[in-house]
Length: 291
Image (cartoon, rainbow, N blue to C red; front, side, top):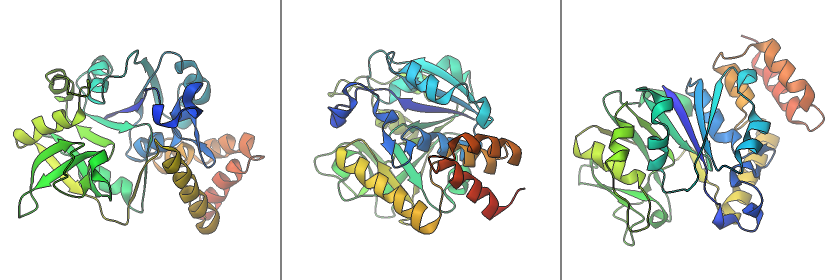
């Protein structure tokens, strides 16, 4: 399976902060936002990752992330000159995927929870697609799942004014090799975008969509607004400083996935000791022990 991180767009909900820099390069506590979705993909065992960015921001992402070798992964960069919806990412990535299944994650989404990587790996539907449902207070902001009386999914509705349930679809999606062709078959919505909801509905119509409801013990944060960005930083700060957890660190995710070893992780941590981030990596290594 290959991975896509969609990190394009203009970040209008974060203006003026994002007038000069991509929102996915904004900090969430002690890490760039883009670290969190990358760490999630790595924790799923994905090594080949495509980053879709704007033309002006691509050099900044390359300077930050490089080619991925240090983390035991391979980054490919692709520019999105005009953002026209999440589903567009699957079309742009068709050559990169080359018939492989894909995990698509939004660059401003943060996921956390004990056993999260196991959940993501176990629920992948090799014959179709897997999406998740997460109960929220404001489902009208997202794609929403409609259920029948037995809680079987019967429809998916993008940003409904009258949501049929509280279950929004978070920004991580798993697809088989059919995803690019299904995305190309969609039409622009009234918002002028190729909606990922339409891709998911095509799988649902064919009986090939696996919908997994996330336990409230997992955390999903969409960090695309001022309030959400601040809340996410506070969330990470509290868990890391008070509980000693390490959240959204690609270096640690790569170590746990077996992509790098103890020596490589230590080498990555040493230049980062002064900020405290490197100390966190070494503390995690010492706490859990070398494999």
